[in-house]
Length: 184
Image 1 (cartoon, rainbow, N blue to C red):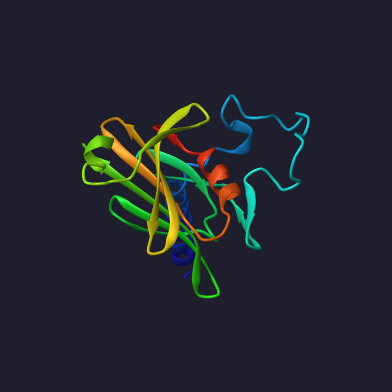
Image 2: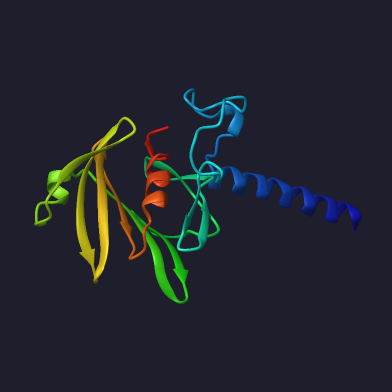
């Protein structure tokens, strides 16, 4: 009996390790990108919140969990911005008092250019640079709620990142977009 329990425990540990490895491509903080600040760097002037932690209308979001949608990698708050994914579409959402406070739509279009994706749209597209990435950008209305979209084509696939909220989510948007990258 003890041997069976030991084998089951070993199988559980291995399965948990495999599932954990599949669900996250998070790099440990000490191995982050070469441009990342070290722990000994002088703190910057500004908010006292942790890097990647933002507040929207009283709700706190910690963008610390790295994941991906297609070849687009980003950091999210896995608890507060729970993903709902179906194929090439993913929605990160947070509800307050039964109403959506934050919606982030992530969609990719394989084999399509940005022009093909926007062919039937009458939205005015401009350029918007975040870090070293130049996105195509437009604003729109989603059922009476303001929204805006960043669009980028990588390896023949066009990715869109849309933010929708009636609240001021500019800090969340900036923190989210600063952590977006394409490819591994």
